Length: 353
Image 1: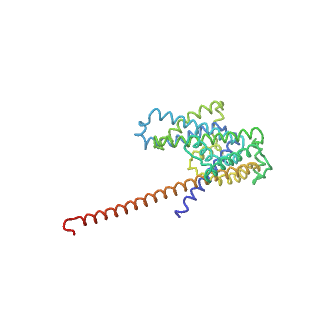
Image 2: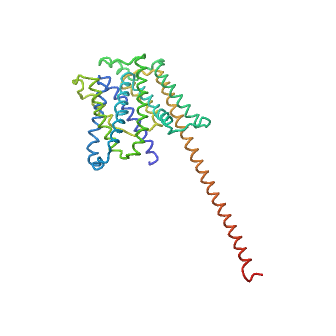
Image 3: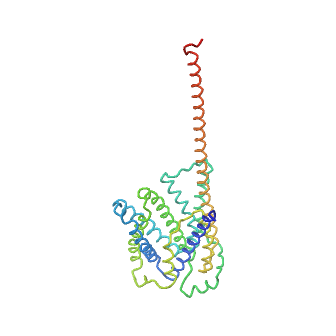
């Protein structure tokens, strides 16, 4: 049973992310403003985390310096506010399938940022280096295919839901400038997520209190998101939450499971089915082909990284072996030398003929 737990966790995580994309898209289809949605999401997370942080980490709050608070404010601005607003704006302009497909580019973008910051090294003459570069190229090709190539559309699984969608005033996004813009916004959102991941790792080394770090960013993002939402939607009567999919979406997306990059392609497949069945969306061949290229790019980079790790481990083992062999040889030579000295001492001792 223990051996199956990682797989169960991975599949559960993928299902949660699939639901997040589909439910969010459904809320936007019902007319909910995506910027207001981000504010409610951050406010709900803050209300959930703040009491826990005050109870468990009340004594550690005073240890937070002004420099650390400024860094947390900027981190919240990068992803929790800017990144999430870009992501939801993209879902509004495109589809849940595009959001899920382009999510496969996030680990690759993180690798590119780490490379620019000299936290990663690429050896172009090695198999691992070639795999990494190939993965980056495939991700770029996949993003271009999703943005620029339409292809034939696949009929939705739930045709009845598609037919009834027009009754609610929902108009499916069309391919063109809006679709390209939405795809670009999603990729830009992935860049902010990758940048946040790299900077967050460095900040946690400086201040390893994850609960306070997370709670602080949620609080900062709540204030930031309120300003953005107030500018984007000045009619506060439209901020009201109703007992419909909008309220479900806000409650659903405050969950934050660990992102498992290697299982993200399964999220892409499930999102295609769910958005087709529950939302009645037409899935275009371009989205599927682009998604496959992104998946191949993701696995290529991960494979290259795995090869690099194995080579490092093997090199370390060889070095340890050489050191051990050298030490054994040195010990043997010392024993021979010591033995020779003892024999010489015995021959020159008094009474020896």
